[in-house]
Amino acid sequence: MRPRVGFLGTGWIGRHRMEAMIATGAIEAAAFADPSPECAEQARALAPDAQAVDGLDALLGLGLDGIVIATPSAMHAEQSIRALDAGVAVFCQKPLGRTAREVEAVIDAARTADRLLGVDLSYRHTDGMQAIAALVRSGALGQVFAVDLVFHNAYGPDKPWFYDPAQSGGGCVIDLGVHLVDLALWTLGFPAVDGVAASLRAKGQPLGPDQVEDYATAAFRAGGTDVRLACSWQVHAGADAEIAAVFYGTEGGAALRNVDGSFYDFVAERFTGTSKTALASPPDAWGGRAAAAWAEQLARSQRFNAEAEHFARSAEVLDRIYGR
Picture 1 (tube, rainbow, N blue to C red):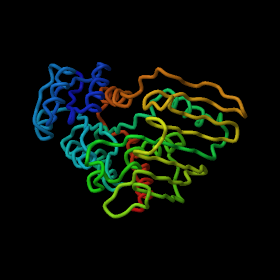
Picture 2: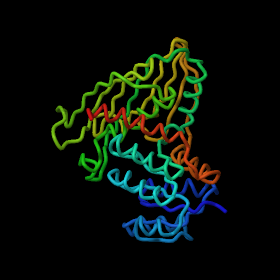
Picture 3: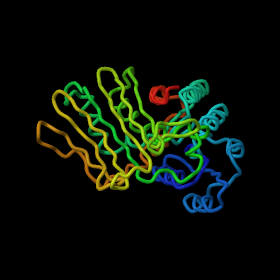
């Protein structure tokens, strides 16, 4: 029997992840909950046999095997813990928590309940990053001594809670930088991190009380690798977005970069001296792969996967960027 999964939050991202999970055939979309009638109706179109219910308590009362959480960031940790305490596996949108302490509490709950925990760190699943990670881990680039990471979003979020640090946990770093930090640590094998330094700004000025940053730069050492990152909202980027992850090694380099300002299309290249070799190019339907992978894993086993411990490593770096 396929695992029965509920969906808490069926806005655009929640519906997209629902669609990706259903497409695997690995799970049954058993129920969903969303306060917006429009979002609920669109979820119904994707999963016509799923039961519409009112909130998390109602979902947990159905005896589900798993739950997908796509709600505002302030709710992620609490809702994940409640589901895990009820014996339900969790796939959560990023960030898993607003602080490392919240993230660690969710991981502890998953470990105690012995239930699968996943986070939607989707950029790992692009064809380009899969190819680059394989090069780094095989030693084909030699010693990777530097990583440069960029995520500039010329628009920024359109919901007020993103700009409230109590609800969001931060600005562009926790929204976009979480992907950058994860890509670096995941590719490098989650080495120890030290030497974290950062500059956070709001509207061009140093960050003040009760503000979230809309521009940030940070640097840290991950094992023997120097990592630099920059991210922003609503910056004059000359395009919708600028996204890049570049890895420099003693025997070569490799880069993932978005194409023509796209949030979705990426090319990846390997560098040797002044020459380039293509590793990946569009089209690449990567957006739902993290969700699909979790659904397929849930169908094999609902038990805790020790890889979830790594979610805390990125959260600890974010805390240090914020000076927490």
